[in-house]
Length: 225
Ligand code: CTP
Ligand code: MG
Image 1 (tube, helix red, strand yellow):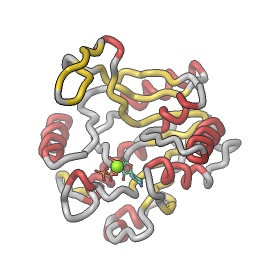
Image 2 (cartoon, protein in one colour; image 1 turned 180 degrees about the horizontal axis):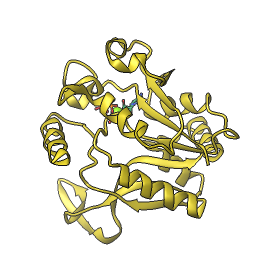
Image 3 (cartoon, protein in one colour; image 1 turned 90 degrees about the horizontal axis):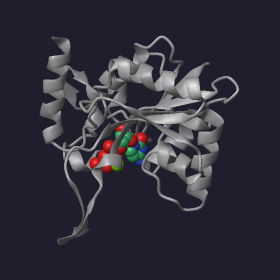
C-alpha cells in the first residue's frame, strides 16, 4: 500500500539550548534535518514526504532540501498540531498509511523501518518503534513511592506508522477534547486503537539535550564502519 511520510520539524529545541532549532545543527557536515529526511527518502516503499516547518523558519531555505521534492507545511503550537496540519494535506484514499518520524532522530536504520512496515501492514494495526527500558524504574518525587516493573516498560521512538484515516480522526478528537499527546501512538491509544510495539535499536536517539550531539556523531561514525 502507498505510505505518506510526515516529518515534524517545527520545534524550537528549547532543551538543546543551541541558539537555533536543533534540527538545523550540523552532524558530520549535514544538518540533522537532512539526515532524517535522507533516512526516509532512501526507502523505496515509502511515498512522498510532508515536512512541517515553523511559520518563521529562517534556516530551511539555506539547506539543500529547499531544492528537493519535499512538500512544506506550516507547524502548530505543539507537535500534535504540527502533525495534524500535515495530515490535512494527505488523502487517505491515495495514502492509506502514514509514517511519522521526528526530524530530531537522524539515526534510524532502514532495517528498523522495514520491520515496522512489515509488522503493521501484515497485521493491519498501527505501531511504533520502541526499545526496552534498561534501568530499574522508580515512581515518586523526593522519595521513592514504588519500584515499577520494568518488564513491560518501553521507550517510544519514531517512526510511528498508522492508518491515515484513523490517525487523522484520533488526533483531531484528542486536540478538540483538550487531551495533550506527545506522540501519535498516545492519540491512537486514547481512541482505543491497537498499537503494536516493534522492538527497534536503542541508538535511534532523539537529539534532545546538548550531550546528545556528540553521542549521535559517535553512533553515526560507527554505522559508517
Ligand atoms: N515539533 C514540531 N512542532 C512543534 C513542536 C515540535 O514539529 N510545535 C517537532 C520537533 O521539531 C521535533 C519533534 O517534533 O522534530 C520532536 O519534538 P521535540 O524533540 O520535543 O523537539 P522540540 O519541541 O523542538 O524541542 P524542545 O521540546 O526541547 O523545545
Ligand atoms: Mg518539544
